[in-house]
Amino acid sequence: MDISIIGTGNVSFHLAKAINKAKGINLVSITGTTLEKARSIKGKKKLIRLDSISEIPKSDIVIICVGDDKIAEVSDEIFRSKILQNSIICHTSGSISSKILKNHKKFGSFYPLQTFSKNNPLNFSKVPISLHANKRSVLKHLMQLAEAISQDVRLLNDADRLQVHLSAVISNNLVNHLIYLAKQRLTDQNINEDILDPLIKETINKLKIMSSFDAQTGPARRNDKATLSTHIKDLAKEPELQKVYKTITKSIIKTYKLES
Amino acid sequence: MDISIIGTGNVSFHLAKAINKAKGINLVSITGTTLEKARSIKGKKKLIRLDSISEIPKSDIVIICVGDDKIAEVSDEIFRSKILQNSIICHTSGSISSKILKNHKKFGSFYPLQTFSKNNPLNFSKVPISLHANKRSVLKHLMQLAEAISQDVRLLNDADRLQVHLSAVISNNLVNHLIYLAKQRLTDQNINEDILDPLIKETINKLKIMSSFDAQTGPARRNDKATLSTHIKDLAKEPELQKVYKTITKSIIKTYKLES
Image (cartoon, rainbow over the protein chains, first blue to last red):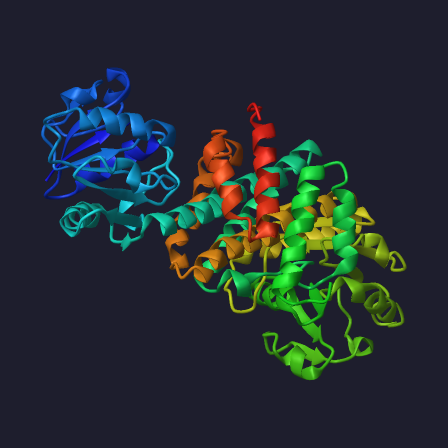
């Protein structure tokens, strides 16, 4: 199966690496806005690097790995290519409907759910890949590609994928920034923030053996009003963090049906 | 060095286990509100289990491991014991000043920063222990105990410890509840929430090789207004989560000096 990727960002980088390792599938082209960017993506000898969609060679699947706001434009360019008229066209976006590709005969969504950074090595076989396609035959091919690079392949329609993406943003982006804020306020007070590292690690480690519902501890879980009010007072000069603290505390008290 | 612990909760459980493994220190007594609770704490043959502070035998250090609201009362009871008049009295609370123990000749704070659950095995040698004492000689003894069970021993005055505790609550308790909310909303929509697990794991794993500042990704980091506004709309029926989403998004935009 011959695959082409359009886009040269973090998702593209890790996806290309995973495809290069897999059996029975070949990455035949990578297209970037400049050849230099396309060159940053590793591939086997066969891989050609392009800066124009019109030059993409015959491919079974074309994966659009560009920013959400560029997908429609890229899709239109693919549509103008005679060579790609029988290709399956899919994108990797979490938040854009696959319908954006509906001009194509065969289209779908190929959504790997993970946080991708170029300088962070990643085991793609553990990355959940969610698929959706406009036809059963298209799904079959997307499934073949997905199963060649991951052990965790799921079917997810557009509406559900949007909800998964939103929950992913909450549990990755919002969580990461909360950790940043918790550490930054210590740095600002000349306290070594690395004291939090074992706790942060264990926060997630615990979730291997218990649910986040059962893992909840702390002053809000105990409805310890004295500590809660001291904390809220201590955050007076950090109004955004104070608002987040208050709101999540309220939600914990509600979730565990504690008297507030 | 002979140690007595008062309290039979999660901290006590893990602390007793760590002391039992260490060389040169002996856990001589454990006191709980009932003997049954005291029996739940494991110890060597020598360990006696008590339900009354007045019976605690001669100890170099007495560690108060009870709820914050019980520390003053326990401290008073210890004060009435003639046997413990020369003991170092310390507590393990993150949010209570060590001054609460100031009636005693030798007192201090012995604060292990970690999330403790009985059914979650823990490597105590990686738990940061923060110490504070009213005298240099007291600190020396607390240090000896702390270094026997952990590789990460720090000095932290009362004011700074309170700030560390608040940041710990943010990065553990608030983060855990955010993860709960992110998963629960998928469950409520009949979507398998375990799709988030590899992402959640990687969110923290990434922080081994980059700072939380550099690790930030997502629509807020890109100031992707279309996705942000879709997400905020999608959270209309989850007003608390919506408020948290908005507030943290605002903070990300501010932190990275993106035009809002």
